[in-house]
Length: 379
View 1: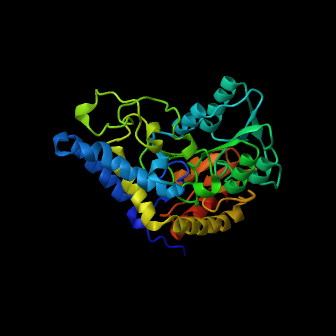
View 2 (view 1 turned 135 degrees about the vertical axis):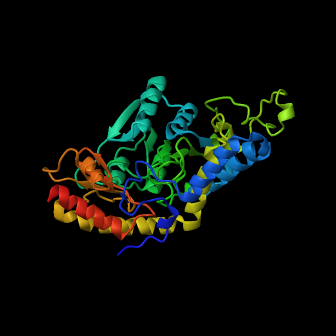
View 3 (view 1 turned 30 degrees about the horizontal axis):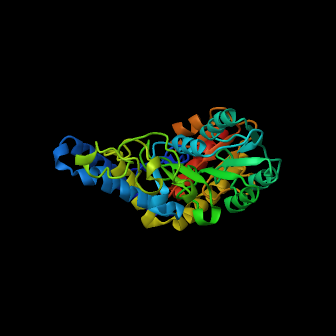
């Protein structure tokens, strides 16, 4: 029986098997308490300090996020969504007419629409890459990178089937052909080791409300040093140099705060959300990525075994250990996920696949409840 030493850190009733972190992650109790305290403080704003509210907490959040990327705080911008980070990348990368932008077949929409608009702007082409039966996404992507490639946009995994991508190899191949690499790590950061020093992306972004267990509307953007003098999406007061001195704000400055801070969203300090996000990242930091990877993989191995008698198969080449997408038998009902939810099992259904995404809080009892629910629905 798999035991989670961290389950008590989450407000998860024992009659619920929450296996849906890839959709939205539950915040740890500590993060909830930090968020509640921040909202309570808003009722008495005179009790808070300007330095703490506007600068200290977001800088602590930036530092915590940087650790997940193996980057420095200067490399990280605070953004509201993955799409915002991708838009920053598109603003600062220029293509030549006729060049190609590579995306994966079935890629998340935000990581497709951005590049369609960029292709229109620069006269480039978006090329969608599908993988053949038995082929990994890494193999499919490497086969299409060449002199015509200007940009490869993907994630560490494909979000529907969970196939992992060897980003270090893909990054090296992209650079060898003069292409940029932009990553959406929303479905992997925190539960897969990622190192910008090895992968060398131009930009990499992750929304914080899924695997990073934080509140909605806060994410983290890595900007490679060669792009940190680029053009932000918006011109706000706090990303300008000297903004710490409120008495001098109308002494308008042309210069920006150092590093990637110029790309911070407006109102980046997020007085109510940032404390909760910071506490969520603190929990993940204390546990460590290695422990998260190991635990999620063990739970998924047990889930695969539990699902096999009912015709569900883990058949994705190079599947990421934390991410399970099971192919469904032909007789599976179209509303399988809804029927499982009625039995206390929360998963997602994506076409002919059932996406099952445990996290640190998942354990053997969740696996048993999953098997019981499948038996009740599929016989």
